[in-house]
Length: 391
Length: 107
Image (cartoon, rainbow over all chains, first blue to last red; front, side, top):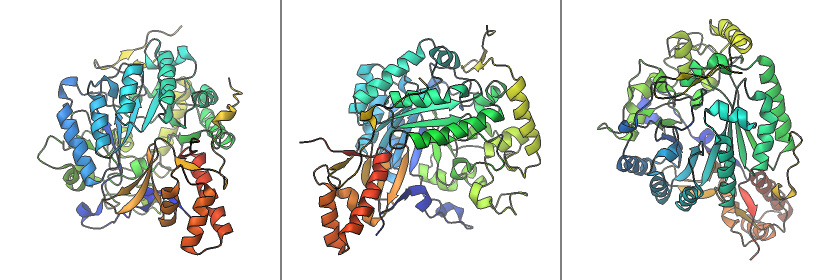
């Protein structure tokens, strides 16, 4: 006998075939972007530059209906995210509704607006897990990156309350050229906060992050060092802290299996109810996304809508992907990145060394990492604000 | 703070036959009715325990010790106790290392 636990997605039989429609099982987890409003202004945000206004957001009743439908079709986990989900006055109500439906609830938050009283209410509503973002370890640097005064101190407080309330905690650390030198300190901070996990996520360049790429792009030396640190710390902190590591891919040879493959195991819902195969998918301007406000069910949209079927499986692939031995391993990489860098979402992801653009992307990354200025374009509803001249 | 030493209390459970394990807050064993199988829901992941793992997890109720669980399964599966104990401890230690399993509070 050998008791075994595997990641459930690996065990999901996903069938390939002509009838795509019936072959893709409903994802286990869904990301809910409840709003694009956020008190922070991080330049690395993956939200689209054209953000959804508050007036277009789904109402409380609409979100409740969405949650009910998700539970009915077999979704097991929901991630309340944004923007900043706690700007929604109905967050507690929605967490309670999800929990009552048997959904596993996760809150992905910047934490700066959350009072102790509100956090207690959220925990009592049945929240299973909280993920808090930290922009750096040094408070001045963290507040500069987030464009929010005293944000860091506030986050430390909320993290502490979370643990007092018994909530499992993940520290989300988005890393880039301007904070990678603090990686060890960020990991130590997570341990000090009694977090269960830290997600060391190198910036992926979509939406606001693409706009800020020159200010964020790490050097190749930084990436090598970070990879070594993560390996070392994983070993040292075994049984104390789990370390997830999202690798950056501009310097990679092979592309990432983005979202586990387009339309295979993930979708997210935008503030106004559109259903996307990836949270950055709206950057692909040639695709139309169906909404929960349409006459279609969520399951129908997942199985039948054009946006999901366009890049499913391998049939759509051009060369060099079509004849590639890895085509069912990485599914051609990331469609959003292919669109952002080549103008055609159906091209090979330039992160792949087989892409004709790979060499030039690598050189761009190298150049931006050494010559790019450090000033951010802060995220806001007015199309961004250039950070004042740095001292 | 680069040379941070984790506080001793932070060290997760070390599983032995005397341990009395229970699922941590944020870890939920559930029957997934859509897919007709048991799943272990954990922060930002869904795990698929096999049949025997499900049996073990159901017995991690905060009352039974690992020794009790071992006795129980050795009887059901009619398998050598030593082998069962080794497999169960290895599996539970993995879960404890990830923070999904904790020592139950003493009654």
